[in-house]
Image (cartoon, rainbow, N blue to C red):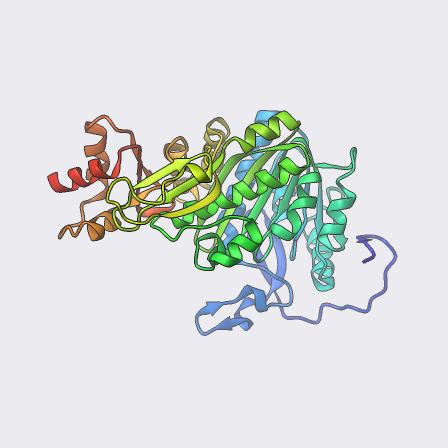
Length: 408
């Protein structure tokens, strides 16, 4: 496909004969599809619109703005950003308008209507000198930018569905010590509902468990780490979280085979006993026992997943400060970031208050805060988790947790 850039000579076969409305978000004002025309009863379906725009992702765009602002502050870098799948362009336009120290933003979409709309929205926000629109297949453009001297220090891949088809080229388009931002909305494979799809797409075996959401996020990180390692690139998560229908990663990319090996060393496997809730973590698949050492039942084994920390605490602390300054404590996303600060160094799984109560047939489900306090009084570190409102993380084994339930 021929790559077309805004401002180049072009024909006018495509016109914007679609219903549009003004959308204000952050500091930008764009024209986007009139979503009320693409709804199923009370449910809006953004993918039915001729140009994709999802208002439910506003929180993520807020977090992304705060993260990139923090990254720019701490690294003192002028940011060159490529938003590979831009649709209306709202994400990249917000980066250009709200993140300080941005040098250049490239928007791209293969959809001609989206390309035409992006150009309108660039002009609408007075960003012609800072933002350029492309009309191309994302993989072709990413491959073009993968050459030394043309790479970006921020590449954002925000697809509808799985990011897998774009990751090989996207990771190579990130300059050394740059950031790769990745979104996944195909939660069914990652969370173990469609196990074969997960094996096929991500080369990993998911686990259907109380902590499936976190396990899926760690499968996604693990896949990006393995993808980078193929090209001698180290990949480490700087901020990772999951909310509602999506998972979101911000990953640092560094050149070096030895560094890539270090990332690979943080991958491993997990066994989970559905009957008693016992969890085992091992670096190698063959070192996991197939029978639960706690109750003797058959266990479920999954992986490879990322076993390391989900966030860089230093950068996360700055992101929390920036988010509060930009959007306030009451804005959605702040509590997620605060919770991530607590849980970042905790084990790669969690329990929920109702799971323990149901599994061990307790008549009463204790309050989450009382469980965390009881664990801390016994000398165990325990925290809430952003993955579940009833979830808690701790290094205490399942037997200890059950004893605490009995005492409450």
